[in-house]
Amino acid sequence: MPVELLTDGPEAAPTTLVLAHGAGGPMDSPFMARVATGIAAGGARVVRFEFPYMDARRRGARSGPPDPEPVLRRRWLDVIARLGGGGRLVIGGKSLGGRIASLIADEAGARGLVCLGYPFHPPGQPERPRTAHLQALRTPALLVQGTRDRFGSHDEVRSYRLSSRVRLAWIEDGDHSFKPRASSGRSEEETLGEAVALVTAFLAELPSNRKESETIAPAP
Image (cartoon, rainbow, N blue to C red; front, side):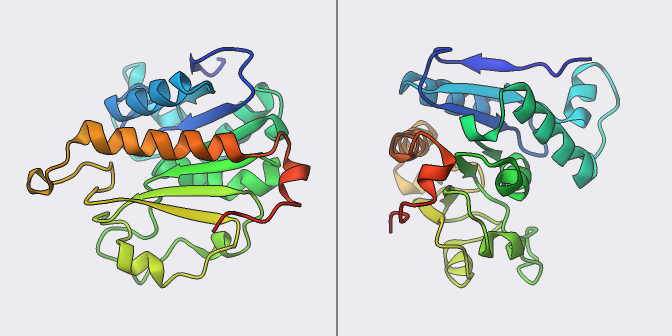
């Protein structure tokens, strides 16, 4: 059965961003919908899809854990192929979806990578970092993180050694989904809008193809 795709933005947009969902929420969750429509409003085409386990839930299957990593990677690569290949695409997603995209970005030859709340380690387990592949990443990447993220706080992430292709951007007082505390004086709509603006600016800076991007030094 073909993978269902949700598309926002013009078909002829100069950039197509493909986004996968996080572990617990589907491709049309409020977070995914707000981010996708916001980025599409900036002129990009945004495509969303689901991993097999989430697709099965949508069709009435009992809730279960995410698929094994090889299955998640395969779904990503299949979607990339369906959309014309990595050289035409920027890939990424929320938490799990962004992490799996980061694992296959170089293999797929993606133009760029966008991770929204990258899970640097399991909550409460900083001794189990998920950063080894990020040290040698060749794909230009933007990782948007909340400063209060339980999967990797600002202070924790500062200690990691990451590729020079990786750019970190921080949402002040945001949690793993960029939601701020009421005491911060900020609203969730405001922080999500900030994340959308960061991604939109990153997409605008990317060269038109991967080969060209590899000759350009990343922004500080």
